[in-house]
Length: 249
Length: 352
Ligand SMILES: Nc1ncnc2c1ncn2[C@@H]1O[C@H](COP(=O)(O)OP(=O)(O)O)[C@@H](O)[C@H]1O
Ligand SMILES: [Mg+2]
Image (cartoon, rainbow over all chains, first blue to last red; front, side, top):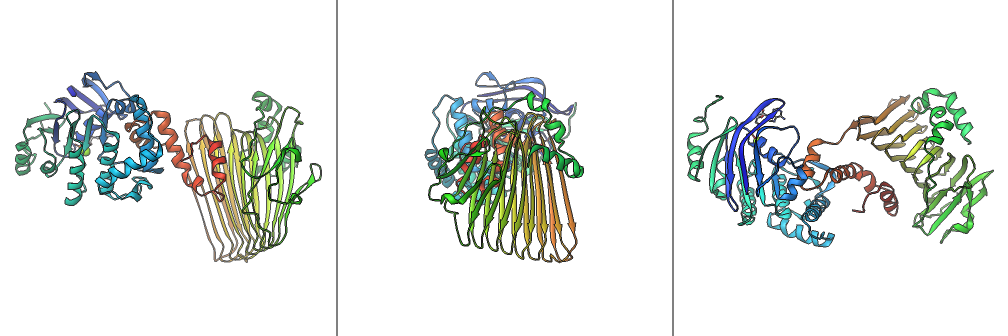
């Protein structure tokens, strides 16, 4: 599904990612853990195609095709979805009309017929219910006045509706209480499929009790320092990230 | 008022016209450079009065259930719309369509006098289709106590100059919502006199411009009596080399205590060359008043653009959706629901 090779990324001339290698096979869930400021969000933004990140070396392919030359919407059409750490507020645009526009744009790019307003309404209601999101939220402006937890659940709602093949979840657990965490994890788990891969970025091991990863990677100071099975997350919970001291060499 | 009279007015008060130079904007060279095609006209309302080249055309018009004596007068002496006491036409929104064709004279001066008796109510949309020649509008509005006049206006293009002078008696209400598009140039000016206690005015508008469009909204509200409320709220979306102007002025007379005045201008600049000039002015001679003003000029939020694009919207779709979001509250709060489709159509927006 996703192949990242020797990826170096700079922001304003400062190197943030210093050679990432990662291979995420179809249907697998990989977790990326690491201390604050280690470059986790940078990696997720680079994969989604945000401006301001310069790839100085390396390559990223999705299903064998280079994605670094694509615009964010072209990547979305190829199946990339980023659930953001800080979802953005869009004043004046209801969640309903936003998702209708997005879904039909993606369907068009994928050669499918557009859905009409009624079909979309039905789909959104059903998915929102599964995520314990109130219907009323759908007619409010995207993320405006949403609580932290509602914003995160709205990200997962979008993911469920847009049906990407590569899900990038950047700290979707932060700011959630235990009940909301369970709801979100159930929503994510419901999307696990043989043709869909996930990269779950988290600072804490807690989320991985609910979303069981196949592989855990530790990202520190711009590089993947260690990879292992789910037990690696448990270890990190005890030892912290101190072991991954700065290694700028 | 003719074009020459407007120019004369401007030359006598240069400060009030500092951002809109009619000599340059309406020079023969400027008018010839990009002659505007005359636009088509269609009217969704049952009551639709059509003025072709400045002259009322009964054969093209429909009065619906509104008595035809609503409209009197002729081009030279000016037209008048008069509603007697207690007459309520809110259920029958009236549309005035102003169209022009190749037989138009060099300029089209329009003169209106609108008068509402006690408790009378009128909803009226002025729809100025695109015009190749300058259109000038001089309208006086007189509202008797507790009358309510809901006034809308769409200008679809061309040179356009307008002055609305409103006198509002006790407890009356005047609201205007204007949409200015493709104006080369436009001046939309209001002088609203709140003469009776508790009178209210709400002036709103959208300036949606690109190319070398220029639109100037100048609004002066005079609080001449106590307990009056005034609102001015304008949104501008400016692309390419367009220029928007908002001059909002509130004057509170010494005895106009308990005045509540507010004005806000928000602009979205879509290009480096677009320009917005906002000049708020408060002149307050009473002590127990609340007058506030706000002003913002910004561009599209790059984080919001990325967010939308990461969900599959291409650049144009993402920009359009953000622009639509910026204008949403103005469109959602139109005082006549039936105007929504006319405004959205003029803006090129899909119905939600
Ligand atoms: N827009 C930016 N401009 C400058 N530096 C940035 C920017 N975004 C992130 N950084 C820096 O990049 C590093 C990694 O940040 P980030 O990817 O957000 O880390 P994480 O998500 O792991 O906490 C930090 O040192 C941060 O200060
Ligand atoms: Mg982060």
